Length: 127
Image (cartoon, rainbow, N blue to C red; front, side, top):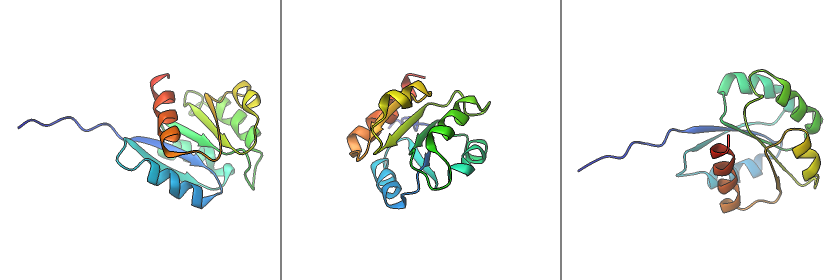
C-alpha cells in the first residue's frame, strides 16, 4: 500500500452578490483542490484578501455596493492582492476592458462546471 500526497487546498475568493451562483461554484469545485470563500460586498474585498489569502479571485463586476471595474483596479494596486490572478466572471460582455484593467481571464456568465474548473486550473498554473 502506498499513499499519494493530498493536493494542497487552494482558496478561491468569489466576490459576487448572487448567492445561488456561488452555490453552483461550490458544487463545481467539490472533489477538487479548490475551496470557495464568498463575499457579497465588494467593499469587503481587501479585508477578505487579507483574511483568507486566496490563490485566485473570481470577480463579478455588477455589485450592489461598488463598481466592479473600480474594485478590479483597486485589487490590482493593493499590495496583498496585486499578484493574485483575477478572473472576471460576468454577464457584462467587456472582455477587453477586463483584461486591460488587470484581469487574467474574462469568463462570460453563465459558466459551466468544466469551463469554471478549467479556468481555475489555467490561472493557477500560469502565475
